[in-house]
Each structure stands twice: as C-alpha cells, then as structure tokens.
Length: 567
Figure 1 (spheres, rainbow, N blue to C red):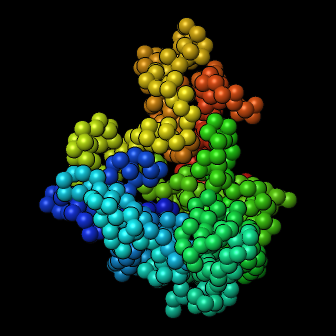
Figure 2: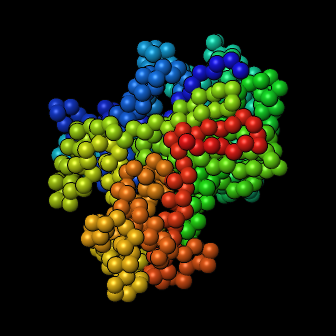
C-alpha cells in the first residue's frame, strides 16, 4: 500500500457566529457587540454555544500543526443551520483552505438542514442591558421585546447546501474520482429519491447529499447523508416543517426503510474498493452501532425513552451493513467517545464515535491508514482557555436577574468548564425532564453518606469508604450527590476520556457503591427511590468497565478476523 494521508475527523462543531449581527441590540463586551447566547439556554442544552468558534479555531490550528491536509466535518458543523451562521462558517473554512492547503469534506447533520424547505428558529440572546431576549426568523412569533430576522432561518435541501457546496458536496476538478449513489452527475435533479407518508397522502422528491470522493490515489472517503425526513400522515402545507418527522431520532433506523438505495450503493462501493485495492473510510452523522456498547441499559429502565434510547441504532442496521461489506464507520451526533464492534458470520463492523467540540469531552479524531490497518488517535482540547468575554457575559446575565452564579464561570480551562456545564445540565435538564420527581425530591441536598445511610442503615458509610484511599474518608462522605450524578453522566459520555477528569478517590468510591448497592436493570424498577438508586449505582460498573477498556489510540486491523486493539 502506498503511503496514504492522515485525515482529521471533526464531529458536531456546532459553530455559532459570536460576531453575527442578528438585528437586535446585542450585549457590548470590551467595546464590541457580541451575539452571546444566554446561560439560561446553555445550561439546558447538551452542547454549549458561544464557545464553539474558539474551539473550532483551536482544532483547526492543531490540524495545521500536525501537517494534515484532509478534514472531514461529520455533520452538525453549524449551530442550527442559520443562514448567517452557515455563511460565516464557509468564509472561515475557505480561508483555512487558502492559507494552509487543506480541504474539507462535509456531510449534513440534523442541525444543518431540514427537509425540502427548511424551518424557523428562535434563540435567546443577551441584549445591551444584560437581559435575555428572543431573536426569531418567524414573524408570527414576534412579541414585545422579541426581534425578527430572516438570517435565523435554516434552509432545506438543496438551498441549505449552497453555502457549503465547495466542501465535497459537488464535484471538484482535482478529484481523482467522485460519484453519488445515483451515478457520476453532481446535479441536484440527478440526486433525488421518492418518499411518502405512511398513509400515502404526502409524497416528495427529496435530495440525497451522499457522495464518494477519492482526493488522493488509493483513498476513498464515503460520505453518507443519513438525514431522513419522513412525511407525516395528514394534511400540510407543501414542504412545511410540521409535515416531516425530524431527522434527529431517525438516523439509520429510518434510512433502512426510506433510503434503501444507500445500502445497495455501500455494497457496490465496498466491493469495488476491495477489487481495486482502495482504502475505504465511511462516514455519516449518525452511529450505525450503539456507541455506548450497551452500557446505557439502566437508562431506559429508569428514565423511559430518552434521547439516547431514541437515537440508538437497531441490530438490523448492523446486519444490513455487514451484509453490504462495510467494515469501518465514523459517527457523531451523540457527542460521545467510544469504539463499538460487532461481528456477523466472522465479518466485522466497527463504529468509531467521535466526540463533539462543544460538549464534554471536547475532542476530535485523526485517522492514519497503514499497511496493517488504521490507527485512530483522539486529540483532546480540554486545556484551551475559555473566551473571557463570554464568561463576562454570563456573569452579567446572572447578576442582572439576581440568580446564583454558576461554578462554570470560574473554570480555569475549557475541559473543566464543560464538566461544570454537565453539572448544570443535571440540575436544569436531566432532573426536570428525565428524572422522576419524587426521586429528585428525596435526594436533593443529600451527601453520599446520607444516601448510603438510607440504603443500608447507620454505619453503612464506614464500610463503603473502607475500600477507598486512606485520608479521603471525610471528603468522600461529604460529597454532594449532585457531584456524583454529574460524574455519572461524564463517565457515560466520555468513557476513557473521563478517567483523568474525575479524581481517582471518587472513581474508587463509585466502584465500591456499585459493588455494595448496585444491581443490574434487567429485573426492572419497582418505582421506589431505593431501587432507583440501586440501578443507578449499578450502572457505574458498566461505565467504568467501558472507560477502562478504551484508549486514546485504537488500531483497527485489516484482517477481518482480528479484533480492534486499544492502547
């Protein structure tokens, strides 16, 4: 095999244009008007907004330092597909290509584009008086104190690709090979497929943006548009947002039903790649295997159908792709670190889940093809600084309303900021939206010792901390349950990347709590807080086992019978 180039894979950058003018009197910080999204919105979102521009810049700078020329954008490259945001991102990427000789290959995520005609967005910002105001693209939502601008609108297919068309979606003269599932043409009218509502009343010809490109001899990048918009039953205005099921939870489960031509294309490309000796790397925004590798089984029992449960691909997806000959796939969407492998009739399929730049843990991947297979390296971005202007905006917002200041505002680096953001998420999103209210009421304000006493009776904590490091007993006993729960979510999301972000004594405590009180979720939950906590603590075992089995460098062997080895 000839030497092939390294490829950087960046997922879920969710670029927000902090310097955008959305037509409202924005907050002024250090003499400059900034489009700062509110902390109120940020603490309820699984991603942060205002920090995205700086971390994307840092990621691209790291790519340059390593001399990497090819960069895959694994979907959700924009905050929410806003017209102005997408235009500014294009300018940033085009400048990067001009200055550094890099090339970007993009594919759409659920936040970048919607259906055939797009959708409105309404976001909360900070104004010149440090107050929270809404800015919308929907004139019908304008109220006193709300501002309207078409720049907030998210386009649909194909208009939403216009600003980013040069990043792989259409053929470029220097491509060695370029095709779509429909053939060699890159014209929009040659890339349409038919889709109908279950009742047959609503039918559309939608564009699919998938493509295969050979940027350098021997390297094939298969960019799969797994956005699926299924028309709903009923009567709707042609192409309106309400006429379609959002692609967010659809992914590959819906693709099998509504875009079966993609599977046929994957089979054809895979066979050609083997025959021609090409190295084939496949990418889509959505995972093809459970990126948590079964470690989140407790969640469906405790919380019902969460976002994670709705977005998990079924086994039928793995079966279809293995049968099609696909062996390796990179995904984003869930902002998770993980390597998942399945085998069917001795034929392997590996899904590499790439973390987001704007959620814990912030990282991207570098892929290095070699004669023996692929080396996949994780590059963390936790140590970068948070823009002090943004932190200033958050402090002013909170002070304006007399609310309690969040510890995230004093974080010394970006990684700790995101870890503190996870704690805020527990309070402002997971507790009110997913957790049973009576369980939240029962454990709020309690320490680990309080909970252990309730579960096991007086003196229980002494037995728990006996297995923990000497000298840490008092500190571990006083640990706020909110801190423990935030660490639970960090371990679930970050796997191996969380191990050095959570103090070692806490990790030993969590292993001990799992052994002392935990139980697997298979028996179900009887509705009591006691049983809830037992299942919740038991999940620590799965999270820790998954984290300790991971590595920052993963070697995927070419030989189909070999296991993926982590180092």
